[in-house]
Image (cartoon, rainbow, N blue to C red; front, side):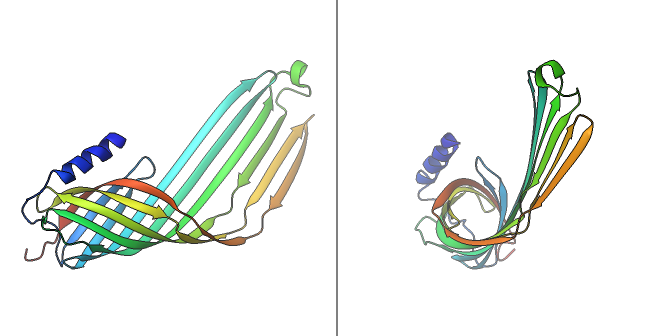
Length: 232
């Protein structure tokens, strides 16, 4: 990923004295935003030659499962996480003599949700080592609270346009400069099946709210396609 970033920077620096091709008022631009984390989409609508409205969308679902054998028992762990985010913002382009290069800055308001489920199961496989009966188990499942977050995200970027439609660039984002999070109630359930007797437990977590500030940041590679060009 670092090599890609450096290649993009060299291309931007070496593109001086090119013809004007950056977006103008009335243009729309669809952008793929890529990093080592979750890729997302960005739609920019240029209301003026150097000003655009930004609309973003990101979604990610991950699932992992591991089974580990130990002396006398096996342990199975499962983990699934879902993240969804919408963003709305503005950006201001900086005027350059070379109209193929478009530096810009702006800010997004990001609305996101995250939800995860963790489970673990411990099953007896050798009573001589672990005791009890073969097939005895302990199972637990944790549903972490659904968390809704509203955050303010400043951005700083630069685009380079190959032609009238296609461009690449870099975008630097300061994530969650100010954020408010509300977590709904979660739960914990467990079952202990021992000596052919089953015992269950259930716990519910209360809803919570919090306000935080931070300076976490990420650098992204962007690939853009411009359409609805003014005059077409």
